[in-house]
Amino acid sequence: MRTGRSRHWTSCLVVAVVAALAGCADPPETTSAPAPRPASDDRTPTEAEQAAGRAALAAYAGYLEASREASRDSDPRHPKLTRFLGDPLLTRVRVAIDDARRHGAVRTGTLKSEPSVTSVSLDGDPPTVEIQDCLDATGYRLVYRKDNRVVPGSAGTRHLATATATRYPDGRWLINSGAAHEDQPC
Image 1 (cartoon, rainbow, N blue to C red):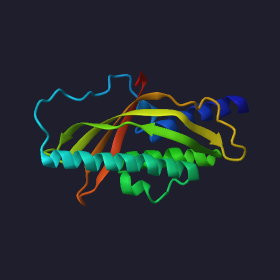
Image 2 (cartoon, rainbow, N blue to C red; image 1 turned 135 degrees about the vertical axis):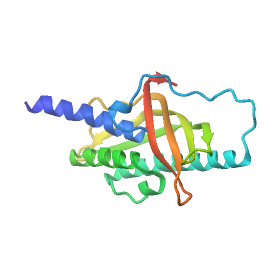
Image 3 (cartoon, rainbow, N blue to C red; image 1 turned 90 degrees about the vertical axis):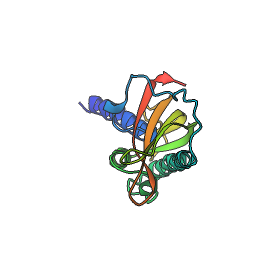
Image 4 (cartoon, helix red, strand yellow; image 1 turned 90 degrees about the horizontal axis):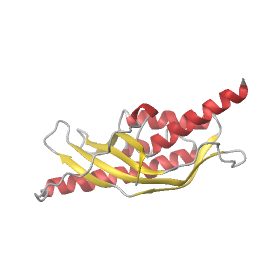
């Protein structure tokens, strides 16, 4: 049945694209577990931890912007994606954008973000920074490119998202994993 397939594609695409662009990957990584909260740590972060946090937040902002541009242009190979994303998240974002492209859909509108650093681990191998964000995707729409009609079931929400930035051997901080906590409004 064509209608059933269309609905199935629409719901899969909506979840994949919103999730990928909201800092997570595929639906299995969408979680109902509580999102991490900043620890009540009384110590002052070191200069190195503060610098790592700033670099990770810059990578996260770059990731969101590159993802928006790539989704708007239906370009899974958009050059900015590799500047801010590492695998496995890079591959999942590319697959979601390509899936939307193959079905004639693009993202339009505004995705609002309010990220903060929740933890910094410079002693880990590799060093990581955990980020928590309140993503507002209520103005971010998946539309059919040919007529700008909104893809049914693609309404966004305002919810918590988490992401991990990892420092790669070349010194760059890249966002390489994340999860949407769509059941946790913010």
